[in-house]
Length: 469
Image (tube, rainbow, N blue to C red; front, side):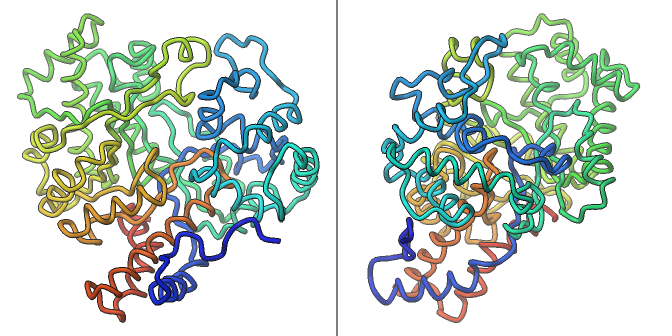
C-alpha cells in the first residue's frame, strides 16, 4: 500500500493531467542540483550513521518543531538543545512518540508530503504515521540507519545529487569541506560564503567576529581598507578550499547604498567603534551589499539576497534556544527603491549575477518580475521558505512568468537542513512545474513541443547554469 497518491499535484482535468504525467516521467529521475541549503558538511565528511529517527526527522527541522510548538509542545520535549546547555529530552523514542501523536497537525502541509515521501521512498514504509504504529516505524527506521546504504554518502548517491551547496559563515575554517576533498569521494559538496556575522553590526559578537576575520586573513579589520581586503581573502579561501560558487546574504531588508568613499570610511569607523545607531547599522548593511556585488564582479561568485525575515520574533525562545528555532516571520519588503543604488553602481556589469528571494509575495508581479525582466544581472529565486509549497510555487509562476519569463528564474533549490527531504522537495517542485506547463499547453500559451525541454530546464538546467555549477 502506497502512502502517497501517484498523481498528486497534477491538474484535475484529464488531458492536462495526462500531459503533466508525461512531462513528469521525463524529469522525475534527473540528477538533483541543490545549489543552496543548510545540510551539515560534517555528515558527508565523516559519513557516520544518523543517530536515530528523532534526530533525523524532528529535532533539527524547524518546519516540524515550530508546528508542534504552535500547539503547546515544549521544544525541550522535542530534544531541541538549550542555549545554556540545560536539560532537554534525549530519548529518541519518546520524542518520536510525541511527533506521531501530533502528526495530524501536518495534514495538507508541504511538510506532511515531504515526510510521507521520505517514509515511503527512502525507508519503505507503507502506512501513514500514527500513535498506534509509532514504535514499529521507529524500529524500522532505526534498523535502516544501521546499514551502510543509509549512511550520508550512500544516500547522497541514491538521491542522484549531482551537486549540493552547504552554507558557512565567513569565519568558518571549512575543515569538513577539506576532509571531503581529501577523502577522494566523488560527491560534489561545495560551500557558500555567508558573511552576515561580519557585515551586520547588530549581529551578536560583531566586534569579536571582525577581530577573528582579521586574525584569519592578516588584515587590519579596524580599517575600511583592511576590512574589505579581509572579505576578498575569505571569499578566495571559500572558492579554493570549499569550491564555493555563491555568496548568501540574509538581511532583514533589501536596502543597498552606494556611498562616496569618504562616507563609507566614516560609517565603518562608527560601526567599528560600537557606537552606530540602528539607522547607521542598516545603512552599513546596505553599503556592504553593494561592496559584495562589486567583489562578485571581480571573482564571479553568484550573489544571493534573502531579505524580508524578521528573525527570532520571540525573545524568550531566542534567549533560551538561540537562533533559527522556528520564530522567523515574513515581513513586507521594498525592492524597487532598495536595490537601485547597487544596480546603478554595478547592475550592468556582465560578470555579475544576483539572485533575489522574497517572503513578500505581493512584490512578485509589482516589483521583482519587472526588475528581473529588465536588469541583466538579476534572476528570481524560487518560492522560498514559507512559500516552498504547491500553492506558493503556482503563485510564483503565475505572478512572474508573464513579465520575467522562465529564463530569468533559477529553477528550484530546496534550502533545507533535513537531508532526507531533498528528493521529496525536488519531486514536489517537478510535479508542480509539470502541472503548470501542462495547463499552459492546454490553454494555448505554450506549444506542446516546447514543454519537455522547458520541464528539463526548470528541474535541472536553470539551477546548474544560474549557480555556475
